[in-house]
Amino acid sequence: MSEASQKTGAFFGRRKGKKLRSGQDDLIQNLLPAIRVIPGSAPSSQFPNADARETWLEIGFGGGEHLAHQARTHRDINFIGCEPFVNGMAKLLAAIDHEKLGNIRVWDDDVTKLLPTLPDASFDRVYILYPDPWPKRRQRKRRLVSDEMLTTLARIMKPGGELRFASDIDDYIGWVLTRVLRSKHFRWTAKRADDWRKPYEGWPGTRYEAKAIREGRVPSYLTFVRV
Image 1 (cartoon, one colour):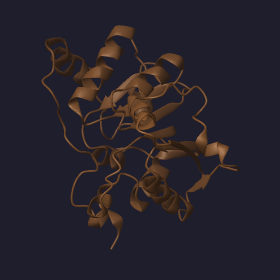
Image 2 (cartoon, rainbow, N blue to C red):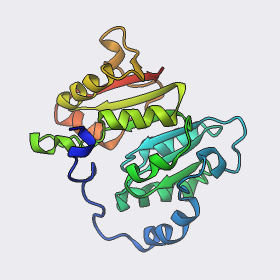
Image 3 (cartoon, rainbow, N blue to C red):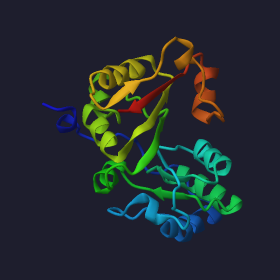
């Protein structure tokens, strides 16, 4: 039985935390619909400046710190961010509104509903950063990275595109490596230990990473290339 067929729940946890402030609620009601990804459409077609621009995807952006940093640093790149947690979405929307980050589009539902609708070779880079590790044995089937997910990502990524995965949970790192190394679609780029110990170039850090370091866990940063 495949990992996908064994899944009994979403790969993410709760959808909403504390009550939104009025300004956040206004962004959810008004800005979110205006920049929500349209399923079935080419990602590049959903931006005003799509010609010859790369498109990067971040799955599960949390509070949006990394995504906003990338978007403001790379104004010539288009970004799609997926996050079902309403409070995290509200934080990113506030940054988009305040900084006029017109190169971001978002998806606020389960990413597994969106990805199958997207055309082949849609993305030049994909980030999966500090996803929920679902550490208990009975929960591991809910982990985002699976053989089936890698096949899906391979389809929507361009040849030569990068898949970046970061986590502070050793068991999840091993889980991902096992699945990538048996995949025909991806190649792990590491040649020495420091290649996965060092953060990515221009890495801004995230609040999840800061918490992990405070609690004594060591993050790993994996980079895979779509072959």
